[in-house]
Length: 178
Image 1 (cartoon, helix red, strand yellow):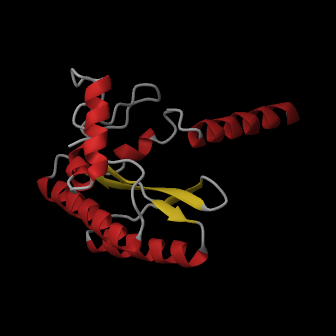
Image 2: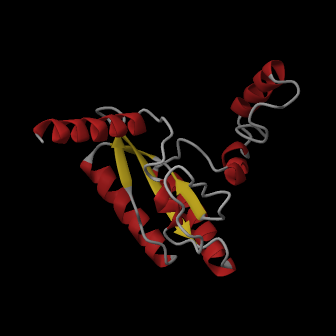
């Protein structure tokens, strides 16, 4: 009995380490079905995109200092609740100075009003987060223009590098470039 408990805890610990390392798993997939009208498939058969689940991610970096974390949590709570979205905030330690956060915006993709509300919430989080210094560490493909739309020389250099190594534009088309 004791060995089974230890083995169960070891599997849970390993799954957590795999998640923190960014390795895909199905641990969090049921979350995508929470607001969806789609039925939750069995483990191993979940495909939120195929099943039409409504899910957008707001994933900023947050300095690991109490005043920043309090400000961040208040900002997300205020914006999400004003849009009728549950503020599901996770903070994962990246280093002794920084959290990466994931805020899933869940909605019924089949409901046009819920979809519009979630998209509005996403843009409000991006804009308010930028003002407060909570910038995303990855972007939704539909939000690439938000990050690449400035006239910074950086994006000219990125475009030149991308053209040099990917002249056919097959690597991540439309992402992280103008």
